[in-house]
Length: 452
Image (cartoon, rainbow, N blue to C red; front, top):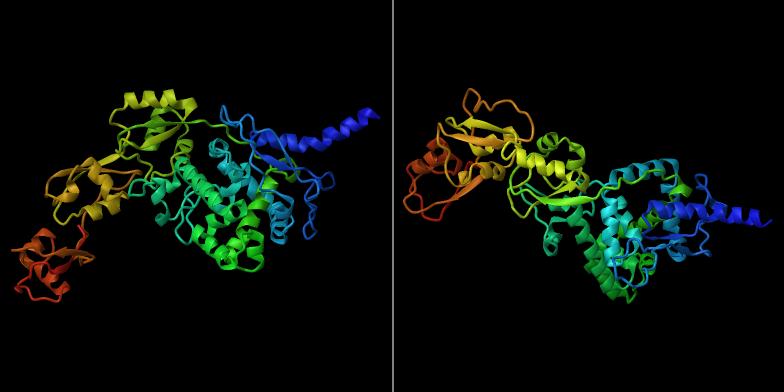
């Protein structure tokens, strides 16, 4: 009799134990309901067993040394899980199609998840936050929303100021999985400190802290679910938190729901390279997985590192010696480039378009070239991240220049001198500005000119 009871207890707790192993020991799980060991058939309600409540498991392995605070409360409380929208999304994401999608997303995110979990544990935040990129980006660092938000955590360009993320022709650090993770967790932590609840903090991450704070101030209500009942938040935000809770609840119980992806345990090391190099050439020289190196450094717009000495390449620690040796062997041979002799009519913008690179990247290999005119016969070095045919210059026949730039007239300048400077026909320049060829140019006048 005692043996049968013990077997039942082992069978009852095994899903949670396996979930703990999959989640790296950093989190809290709702107790598995023995009566609901598998997802409910489509269209039938799924029993959540809220009376059982969430069952915590040890966070000791992920807590920083010396940390003695109690584990943060789970977001997966019975009230949240029993909300109608949460139940709806649990049904949707636990459907066969939903589980297949979650498995694919978790495989995609597997190289980032250990780092994210470690950062969450350092801050003592709820472990379920590791699943927020599932609904933000599907764990795609290159994801871009219709509104222009980018990266795993979907940062808008106008919201990165406080987080020291850089965006230019070479890099978009909203796609840097390390910098964006630290920034997102800081933002969530600040939201929680200000609003006092995790549902509201999540709502503010979606809608903005100002919008949620205004709704709370307008109504006197500081409860996310009550604000949703009164439709005081926008529709997207009303659905955002239930969707996240549903995903987190399912992924916190992988065996129960058929989540079968196993995380790649990759430890990343940051390496300052201080020069431009192509990731594919570096990987080939080092004999390592080029796709993995690219996935770890998606912030690089062209797969080429900038010369910025502050930029750090993320390299799997297991292959760091190979990469370091490759860098020593190939001091200058890790960047694909072309040598081009300037011909009449060539412009840097046309060359950049042809070779598929930015003007700033051309400037890095030809210092100062952006601040002067091209000289016919000079040779310039043009980097490239792919094989392209040689640039043939202008095609036969007249080419109509596009006057999309502007020029402020300085003392002594004429349409003739500006036509020489911008390499256009003077009559064409005059016509583009509604002027006659010999008209005197007043100092400070703005003229339409081609972009050089």
